[in-house]
Each structure stands twice: as C-alpha cells, then as structure tokens.
Image 1: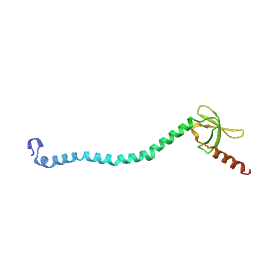
Image 2: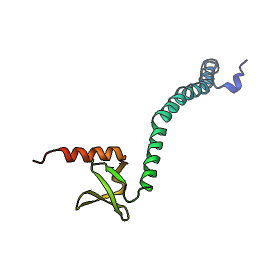
Image 3: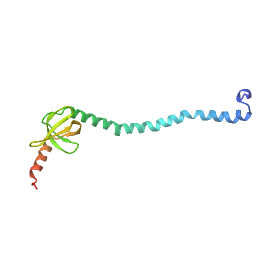
Amino acid sequence: MFNLETCGSTVIECVVVNPVILAADSGLGGSLAQFVLLFAPLFAIWYFLVIRPQQQQRRKLQDMLANLKTGDRVVTSGGIYGTIVAFRDGVVQLQVANQVRLDVARSAITGLVSEEAGAATKQEAAGKPKK
C-alpha cells in the first residue's frame, strides 16, 4: 500500500499526513460548484430586477432627449415646466412664461409633458389669485 522509500522519512508521515493532505485536495472542486450554484441565481435575479430595468430606462431617456424638437412641452429635473424655443450645443432654451426664457442643460430635461397635463397646469396657474 505505502512505499516507505517514497513517502518520506517516517512512517507516521506516510500513514497520517499524506492521506489527510490528499483528502483535502479532493474537496476543492465541490466547494467551487456549491459557490457557483449559490451565486449564479442571485446574480441572475439581481440582473433582471435591478440592472436591466435601469439600462432600459436610461436608453428610453436618451432616445427622448435625442428626439426633442422646438415646441415640445417638457419638465426639468428641478420641476420647471416650459416649452422648447431653441437649441444650442448642450443647452436647451425654454420659455416658461411670456418674455421669460431659461437656458437649461439638455440632460436636465427629465420628460415630455402630455397636452392634457400641460393644459391642466395652465388652468391651475390661471385660476390662482395673485398675492
């Protein structure tokens, strides 16, 4: 079973130490498989619940920003509603009231305002008494 000439200097080393070392090596493949089986589903869940929806939302926002045109009613990240009047490099000029124009970064625009929501906002502003 054991060859004393190749095992080492003592019998104890051949009988006790070498089988223990060999037994420890065989378990490494099993722990890797367990690791993969544990974390692969967790990564898949994380991808489909967090990463993928965020990528889709970012792509949708970039498409909306690329397709802006003069006359669109938009809302900024600061909550300012306005109508696009002009474009420059990375700047959009919004008209928020008569004779009031603001320059905002194109990236500050967070969404388009539908016609119904725009009409409701104008009615609310017209219906409030001035102080």
